[in-house]
Length: 611
Image 1 (spheres, rainbow, N blue to C red):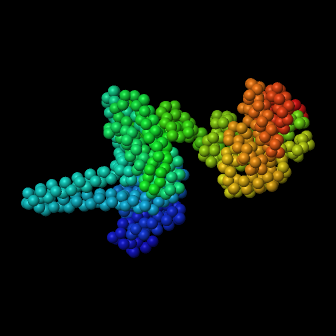
Image 2 (cartoon, rainbow, N blue to C red):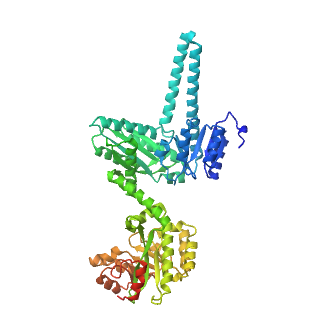
Image 3 (cartoon, rainbow, N blue to C red):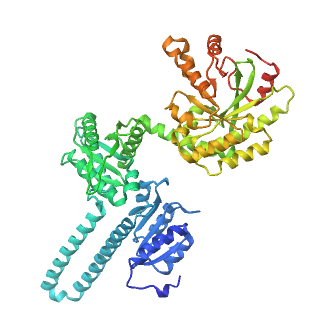
């Protein structure tokens, strides 16, 4: 950019973002409002731009190549010339954005993508106004000192003018402080002021043994749905209404703050015990359950609340807020519209979960997984008809990690897609080897679980086709097990994928039948070949006649729809006999074999077991 053409009377804004589309959108918005806008795709371009012309404001993306936004911000704040330039962070809604860290390294605000026109302008205008006010104060101070030196002989007049300037400066400073410490939308204290209040409460608790306090962290449930469906203006109106309703649940001495987005913090001071905080949380949940009558809409909104008891042993106020946040996520996991009180063990669990996630990411890179195989037995012939592929994690220090422990983490982080694809490839490769062995029974099938997340990948069918082609297996011998969560989506896209799998002669099995919704209308709509009866129902067959009735009903449903029935968790001869009497088609469980390593499969097949 030719900086000679920059208008010196316009405010200069530097946008640092490695995504050209983001640069173009932001530049268009701000240029139309009369700002000089410069763009930088990386840290080097940003450094060159600031060295050439110092901007009045920097918009900085968090997710940057090589050097992330936090480090870039720290560098700007460490350089004397750019230390006072306000930095507004840019973050996508699904990015992992550490708000506490963002403010700690020097950020003054943040904007989420996709951009909302009015929000961008308001936040930019506020920060430019703050900067202009600070520069005005500096200018006033310089002018004040100059006049005092030049007009010492006019002492009385100088003192009078000095007094007036001091009053003006104090008023301006008060205005700046008010803007800096309060949320521009709701007028509530912001995160900075809330942390200050927390710090004061913590210091008081250290000095006064009888002083007790608690922190509540509140996050609105499904607020994004309101924003996405009704628009950000309605979302802003709702946030203001939520703030007002929260204040009705609190005492004047309590502190209510908007921490950002749809998150609110509450500080309850000088309370007797944790039960007071619980009563406040219950009162808030009750109040929030009532409809919000906005200018054009009536909406409903609930929240999840985390409660942290103000322990004087905390080193920093941010840790209190962190623990309340942790408890809030536990409340959200328990079904939303609930509260949860923080327990110190939860912090350790959070650390362990983070370590597990980090280890799991490395495990995907290093392919630390194994596939175990459990035989599926035909109850007509009594012989092995196939195997289910079950993934195991060979952790370098912990040994074998149970799928129960790492699969939920893999699902949440999206790593399940890579793991699932690897298991499918490994299982098909192994099936190809077994089918070329002379002792292998014909036909031998392989059954692989397919995560619901894979159905959102546009290249799922291409991946499956490639795996089948590379391993030269007959697709009729491949069974893909899906859960009811896939079927409950009931979208045309999923129906098309399942139909295309069926056209390839791949078998489709509903896993864990009976543990979810089990809607018969959905079963009719999808091209399923088999229903797998969950082991919990098989286990209860022998307990009483009432529960015994469920398994026959499930087998009857499968037969009536032209599907096979597969029973899981068969452990006793009595269960096997009952299933045969009920005309169940297939079974698997410890009675036949536990899941075994691939090298033991041929040994098992060599013995030609029959039940």
